[in-house]
View 1 (tube, rainbow, N blue to C red):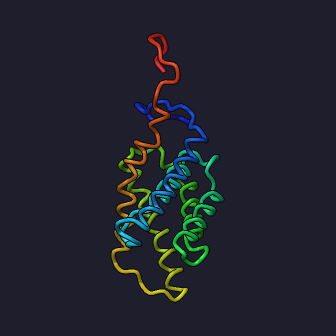
View 2: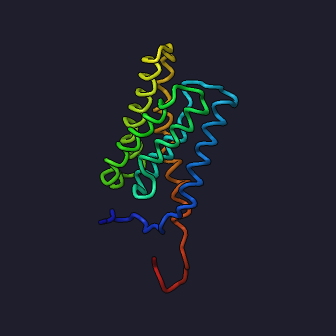
View 3: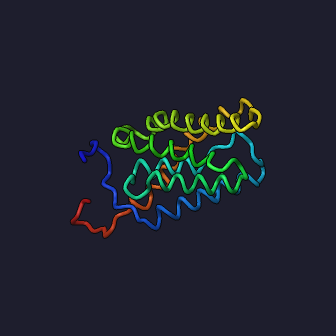
Length: 176
């Protein structure tokens, strides 16, 4: 892949770090659902953010199937209609993999704007499945969640790429 000028050369991502970050994101989502805010509709989806991040940066290691499994875990945790989050995360993963080559050419702030429609589509799918199953409309604050999730994209990029930015074996003679 041809790199943008000024973009640092990254070390390969550790599979252990990738999967542990996904499990930590799942735990954060679970804690936010039972924590201070309960099941508020405006809370950003940290698991969706992490899934999209790794689907963009490591599409060979984190696939649409992983998104489906994590979606089922969220459905079981929330006692929601089984497959509601699985469908949303699967579509989210597919869309992220389909734009991953183009997305990496942009700066991180522009990437956040590009992933906003992905999070909005996932939120709309969850809302449509809820409405089709007979649950009521969860309110207009649902529209805030994709905005907050996309706003967290630069933070996720900083945190999740940090282990790859360190020098593997630094010395004065090797600039990379």
